[in-house]
Amino acid sequence: MILGEVVGRVWSEREVDGLGGMRMVLVRDQDSGARRVAVDMLDAGTGTTVLVATDEAAAAVTGRACVDAAVVALVAGWDAP
Image (tube, rainbow, N blue to C red; front, top):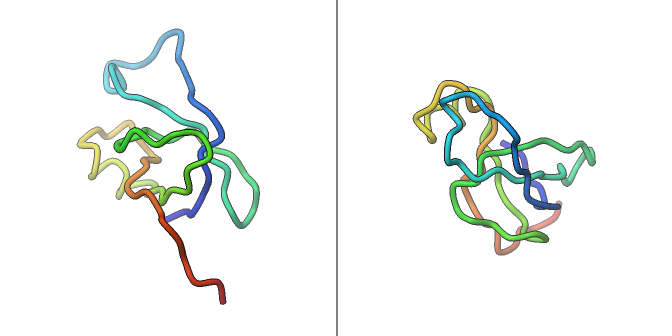
């Protein structure tokens, strides 16, 4: 899982059948700063802190094998170590 911030929405010009109609967002990893596109299951807005499931967990939660990252939680806060 990745803790990240939504930095914007992503639109596709064309996509595989498995992604049809799914909203996608660009998420910046809180730790590394790396960015990745994730399917947005919760309608997260720009600037929202989110939890992103990856790989098999993302495919399972969306029910689509082609998905490897999915927003699965909106984060209200966390305790820093």
